[in-house]
Amino acid sequence: MTAFLHAMLRVTDPAATVAFFERLGLEERRRKDSEAGRFTLIFLGVPGETAEIELTHNWDGEPEDFGGGRNFGHLAFHVDDIYATCARLAAAGVTINRPPRDGRMAFVKTPDGISIELLDKDGARPPAEPWASMENVGTW
Image (cartoon, rainbow, N blue to C red; front, side, top):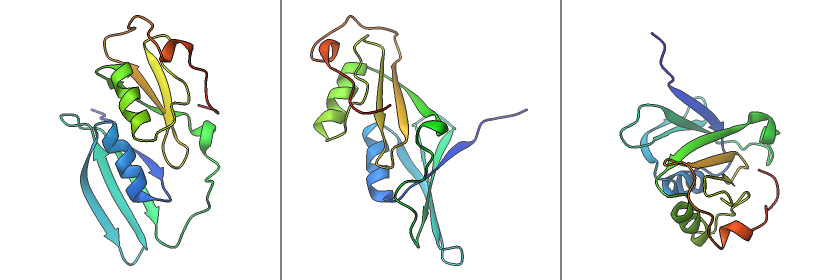
């Protein structure tokens, strides 16, 4: 049997990244600091799900741009209501890079520029403003 365990993301600001994922509904499950290795591992997951995201922060710093950006691809999450989720994220200062014009899909980015795809769990909702006429912002 094979089971998916986690995806790892290198991060420059663990607190900002944890806060970003908490806004999406994930929770911190455990954290490990390695004095010898000079890094911290933070595991986050969706309540009730087993798969996790592992955030790796190297204490001695990382380059501001890991160079992963678009070639990494993205992480995807089902959300209960795409419009409510995007409104909540935007109110918290998160840029909606690809608004849910179709009522189904949006993209945002973590503080380190990792693309996150948000998909409405019930499929496409009827188009609604302000999303229907909103333009893309940057890359996604």
